[in-house]
Image: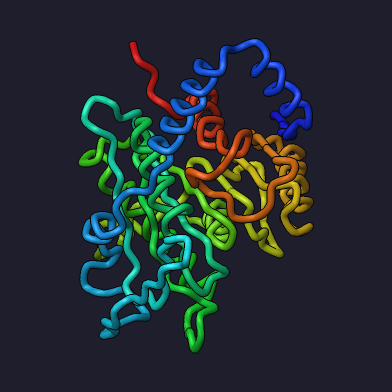
Length: 318
């Protein structure tokens, strides 16, 4: 069990002033330019249209509860260029698979946030998935039906959770095809998507052996969970069998998250569930993976990958 409170130290400015005195101006400029280029390349979001064209419906013949509904999804673009999706009636996953020879065998189903009324699909979905796939982890961005958009008949613990469970089953059922170990499939969620990931980690089943759909015969239990500034369920239902957890949020987030996530960590610790927590001082809600993020919060994907490795969830090279 490990607890990490990541502080953004004020001494960083002093360190930079010292660096300017020591390093020649030209060398320092080249260093800063190179660092900026590398950061932008590492966290650049993939092409939205390309990602949209690669979606796989969770139920090819139509999702239960959405029978006969084929209304196009709505996509709005913010002034900053973020794609925000609503009006989802046929849930799907978008696969981001590692290149051949680089796969570690681990996989993550990613649930973007948006208050259960929309999905911020770029910095909490596609950009995260691309980074993970570039580092050997198969990632699947989930578009789930939304319980709190206007006039919605869907529910969080019914429809949305059912979509997440189905996504886990689909990925597990196609593990051999996608070079994924069925015992190393996790969930990751941001904000409202974090609530969904936590629900999936405590409300799962082994599948139904008698189901006519082969996918429904597969377990929906994730092997690990990653919760990023999540909305925390009122009834978490934690047990000693709850999947191990990677937790991260900003210290300036609203209290139910910035204080609630450490409380969740302590609850897991008391149950002896392996967990790691990062609270970033001076950081608010919704950081995700953006090229504008600064250290130390920009480094959370690296810490997550390292955590997977220390948990034995990445295939080690011989």
